[in-house]
Image (cartoon, rainbow over all chains, first blue to last red):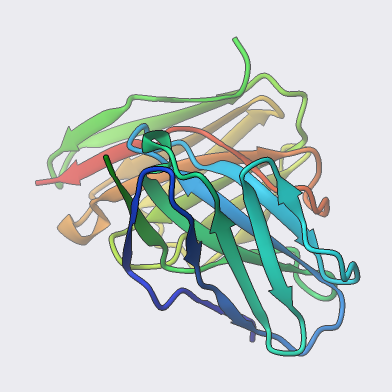
Length: 115
Length: 114
């Protein structure tokens, strides 16, 4: 069964600095999708970025980018020029393409942004 | 109004009460989901509806009863809950059950069972 692991329960970053959140996963599939979601205090989970496993190019959305290492089954999120509004819980998620359509979520990383 | 709307935002109920959570989406999506979010645990998928039909019941106790009268509305009926059912209940939707572009989530209902 697929699993998603976020080993950092909490991270802190100074405003305007860069921070990287880690995510590893386990799967036997070759084709799948990976996601990072942000959950601010408002509680609504918002999709930050999406990566297709068959694409080698790392996804980028403005200040958010990923480092996707397929062989290592690693999918880290880099936030550049951190802003106070980036403070939130960040969840990594996996979706396979064979068998089940379920999304598998990690336990989350709480990001604090220091002014 | 757009997006996924959940009501109520907070709910406190006794173990013998009956209450319902409501979820509404205005995105034209055909799949809707209930998730349970507990502290330090991954999100737990509870139920999946695709075109109003329930396609997944993830071994959820019968004290949770979902209802999907149409593709835009989803309910979670609660009765005789236990304190361990206290959690954030999130509703989500997607264009279809099998699409790969992620979900749109609501802001959840914070449920406390006393």
